[in-house]
Image 1 (tube, one colour):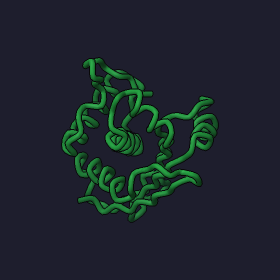
Image 2 (cartoon, rainbow, N blue to C red; image 1 turned 60 degrees about the vertical axis):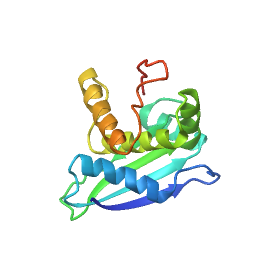
Image 3 (cartoon, rainbow, N blue to C red; image 1 turned 135 degrees about the vertical axis):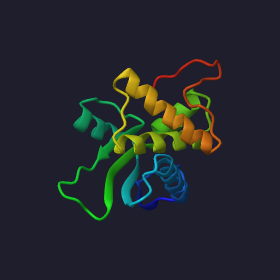
Image 4 (cartoon, helix red, strand yellow; image 1 turned 135 degrees about the horizontal axis):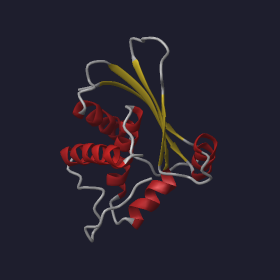
Length: 163
């Protein structure tokens, strides 16, 4: 089991969000799956409102809309005794809306977004097709270990694209 310190933050006005212990377990499952559990790890997960998520996405990605999850990896200039992974900002209203649109349970989608963001902090990406396939397969495997079905399959068995 990963030695994980989680700084869990809820923005003002957020009333619907997963419990901190659930978020902790999803990050730990990701670290354990990737065997990144031999050192102490710290990260922040912030559940943001729409306006904050849109502002951050615009400021850091030049995209003027709120997205489901933003990742801000920490790149340490020196070796530290604790690995600071970075920060995740997850937009509550986008995650809830996507879950409804994709006919998924909200908690399953929250789980997916935390795992997805954690993978970004660990250096995974989905810009290139081969990277996307690798990252999505890791997500599927971790989610399956938690009893959650493939998030990239709709009820019609069609592939979904995440951005």
